[in-house]
Amino acid sequence: MDRRRIWGWYFFDWANQPYNTLLLTFIFAPYFANAVAPDPVTGQAQWGWMLAITGGFIALLAPVLGAVADSGGRRRPWILLWSLLYVAGSFTLWWAVPGMSDTFWILLAFGIGMIGLEFGIIFTNAILPDLGPRQEIGRISGSAWAFGYAGGVISLAIMLLFLAENESGRTLIGLPPALGLDPELREGTRAVGPFTAIWYVVFVIPFFLWVPDHARPRAAGGAMRRGLQGLGRTLRSLPRRPSLFAWLGSSMFCRDALNGIYAFGGIYAAGVLGWSIIQIGIFGITAAVAGAIFCWLGGRADRAFGPKPVIAACILALISVCLVVVTTDRSMVLGMPVAPGSNLPDVAFYLCGGIIGSAGGILQAASRTMMVRQADPARMTEAFGLYALSGKATAFLAPALVATVTSLTNDQRLGVTPLIGLFLVGLVLLVWVKPEGEGTGTWLESSLR
Image 1 (cartoon, rainbow, N blue to C red):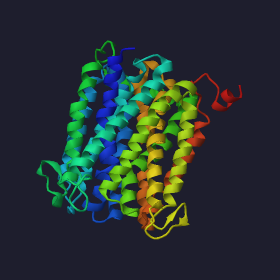
Image 2 (cartoon, rainbow, N blue to C red):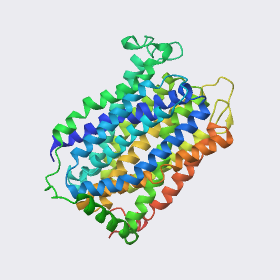
Image 3 (cartoon, rainbow, N blue to C red):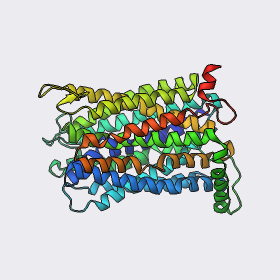
Image 4 (cartoon, rainbow, N blue to C red):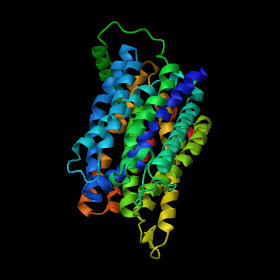
């Protein structure tokens, strides 16, 4: 194994993690819902529809782009293109001023950055099988996810310590926002957009320096035609490949539900528990630290037991978290009343954050390993395009369900209940997934032998 190439690949996870940690979950999303949008309920609904539309666009193009990249032979030019979208979209969020009358352009900018993030991940995930022998893929994937979480922790700590202001206009350590940023205009919090863009530009450099394109001859032309033909053949073959078919379905529902947790966790904490950006940031650090530790351990468990039992355990843990969340607010924990002013709801939510960070990270790392085991090695980018499609084909579903239920009930807590059902569907479909892909027995059959 080329260790420098592996570390270069790790750095892509480190570079892109702030989009999820700072923008999608813990800083920008709750700021948008509570300060930019007219009110938290409207903000949660607008955020949900933006994610649904963006996810649908990604779902349509992901497998096509993957197939074209496999036929064309090169991935780095594509990754550079998606990097430019990532940087432009995130940097533009600086102009999300409090109480702005038209939020459309901010939501559009966020969607553009997210498209760059997701398409970049498709092409870099396809490099995973080239980094080491099959038995080491799970460990490599888990370590990369842990490294990415570590980057999320550090970037979030910088934001909380030096930039993001609370109601008093001070950061977590009592300082005014750095660089003379105006707390009255929430410039410290708004700086999360440019900060995320600059972080990516700096830390993606090792990836481009140390991870060259795999040594495959470049096709002479017609990559689009050949890619689409190959994609068509792959799609038509899915009914004859039940393990891959079941895995794409299971992954589709589970990752959709998990993305729902990430997208609405901070918004929920701000609206239901009344947390400030600083408190949400501490929650994020808790989740990211737990995720970094347990993703590293999860990679070892993946190597020892295979990805399937690891994925099943993570789904069960996340279902449990969802049940806790929807039965907890300022007046109760697990549906049981608590005294006014009790901090038990806060403690319960912090514990849930640690489980979300751990189980969510392990689930995604092990899912990459499972995709490698199910895919055709000769068409790996196309396979991860299908994997992205499975993660985005119903990407509109979780945000749309959350937005719809939130609007109908006018209750943020009830709005997240659909995520439980999505996880359950994914867990049921996992039963038909063969641990080593086509040609092996089901998980139940393997356990009985």
